[in-house]
Image (cartoon, rainbow, N blue to C red; front, side):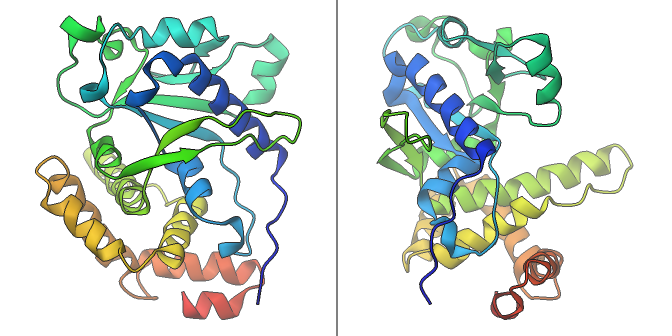
Length: 273
């Protein structure tokens, strides 16, 4: 049965608008910027793949240091576009009035700028943005640099004509980074002596969306990332999580996906997922 694409929520529209603002600000270093995370999943997987409305609140931008060819003052570029650091290293939001900031507690919309570990090419690109807090250090995101392709990223607001072409992470790297996020949270909780925080429903459904929409080449693409020295560690960890959490319907991820989909009135899909 053909499913009609649901209209974007106000939150998704605003998230895409902020992402496009950040991409415009970083246009001078566009060849070194790769979009990952939820917004990349939204672009790669039709919303109709699952009959459940998902809301993406942020944008993940990873900097490919090998593609930098000149000064790259990331913080200054984003600040000049009216963005400001909020809530931690590399988290950028729109500069706003105190009222907007108060409302944002209920509706956080931001762009996360990341460097995938390793050395920053100071001689070429200038000061490392991680040192100033303008970017965070996120080694697992290296797989997005090994599995991406140019894609048009359009606004979700019909009145916004922007449609830049951007490097967007592929489904294999999106699956790996999403699964690695689960394991990172578990290990952090374990280090604190606490129980692991529950996996967010959206993260679980993103994994289901990717698997349902995956082309026949997904297994080959995952193997390629696993065999690449730069992506091997991330791939091994993530594929282990995939087997543990989603290898069967009675596994943690399978149970949660089943429950969320059934609650949304789609038991048939929940049984087949």
